[in-house]
Image (cartoon, rainbow, N blue to C red):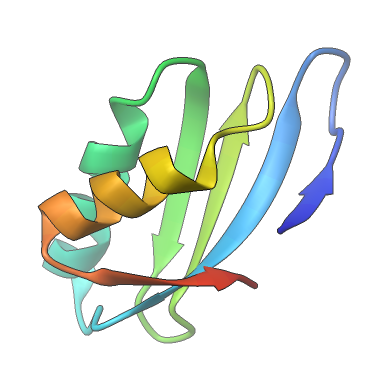
Length: 79
């Protein structure tokens, strides 16, 4: 996982998600990941398959994977 600290107390991670093809897909993935505790921002980009997540602390990859699965897509891994 690519993780960096943007502001004190926040961590940015970029994940690769397969299967997204449109804005609705982006919204579904963003919505599910946004529900994870500590997440403050999610940006999904269908054209690249990248999902950027900002949170208060590093997220458990299994929790992110479960959220992406719930949205109907597959977490390939860290970008």
